[in-house]
Image (cartoon, rainbow, N blue to C red):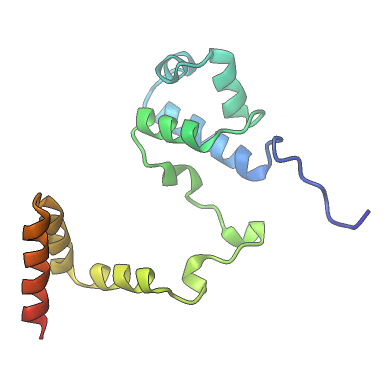
Length: 140
């Protein structure tokens, strides 16, 4: 056998324990009991206990449901996690792709956000295309 540890994908790891602690912390912060959260999720009290102790892994769909019930975004459960702890390179340290540079442009220009919000509200595809054409014309 090599020196690399074989990981059981079904067994909770350190990250799963971290997420479990964040679930419990947020549940406490919104003053909700384990029983109340379990009922809202349609699971047993015992299953929620296993999630919060990190005994059972929380699936992506279940974590999304938990985030909705507890009033936070799914990213809340990963705040403070360092990608390098898991041998991963954060996207910000990799070469930027076209999508990343577009988001960067929007973030740098507060008016761009207003434009995107207004554009998203246009129902007609023909009107959206006219808006694109107008903006391109003004940009030249």
